[in-house]
Image (cartoon, rainbow, N blue to C red):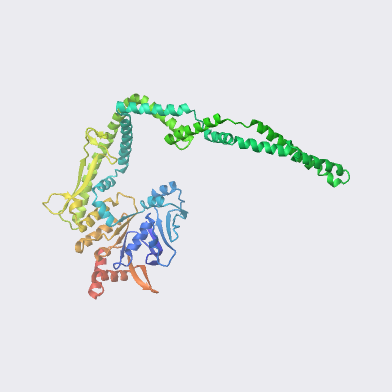
Length: 566
């Protein structure tokens, strides 16, 4: 469960820390006091994207931190281990830091984490019911998820989804092979042309670099000949060359080296220099003799480069890309050549797979119908107790019918990742009226009560430890509100419940009550959250009953309301 929530420099909250309890936690306060801001902070903990405008004015960063207690065998522990999150006993700490500099950070049990992992973890921690949940009820495509959750059919649905995905892959492969004979022949001719065009060039991976080096030498043959000839003469061949002058210097050094021993040490380096200059001169002379003036070879290289350029425009930016296209074309041609054999294999494989998919899809469909009947009865009972007397709640189910030419036709039904069923909720709020689609006729108040009924019904089927209801009281009041409070209390026997409400009838059922207050402090607006004592609860519920003027009668009514709920 959610044990503690700490918020700092977040919107109009400067700093607060709230410790929550098991059971039903009530949050109440005037409109605009900051209840929605607290909910936004919780959403950050669950993996919502962070925005800089959430940071309190004048601050550099906002921090939201939550402490959760995990039961000993909670499956979330395994998920955390698989994602590389360090274990911290039965505690889980999540921390979000939002920075104006854009360096937002996420920590799970003290280790840096990612938004994707946080969102995955958050799904297993808290479920929030608000306006978006009402919208889910208005989307028939989401109704099937509720039935499958209630019937614990999600593993079976995943199996059917996997079978359907594989069937789709097989049928796509079959379609690609079943090209018209004329089209297939054209493709085969085109592939053979590509293979022959690349094969005839006999490309090698490093050929471009080798051709460029050889072209540069041939294109500059005259300059190479001139410069190496002159260099050889200056170093070695001509009268007054460098070697001749170094030789003269060496003779003079040797002549005086016997007079002064310090001079003798110069004989060796000058001798080495003489040999080096002579070797360089001879090497340049030999190179000059090898310089080739070959315009025919130069033209052939340039033509080869043009050919490679043409291939690059067709098949890739580099020679390795061209060779990769060559191998790909050979594989595709081989596939076409053996397509008749593969065609027969595929048709047989598809028929076998269709039978297996149909068998599991029909099994899922029957289990779903059983779950739908039980779900319909449970929701009908719940909504009737919430002031919707005589309401019929029906789970409509139809199987998708396939056309003869549908690739995913399994026994006349269309296979989808969710099976072969279409599910939609219908209600008849008034006795004697025909049931109509929930999305078309339910009012806001009816949606709130139906949503609460669904949450209560699913509570024992789910393992999400904390449920948050954001103003589930929309459109209701009086005796109905009291029944809603009782239902929330019943849900809280299985899961921790946080409920944001404006109705005293609901607040009276709380195990713990928090007041959210907005005030001005040091010329700044701040939000604070107070855990209320029994006397403070009576005062708060009296405020919710009577507004600004609280009388003795109102206080008495508030006290009776709490005692009655208890």
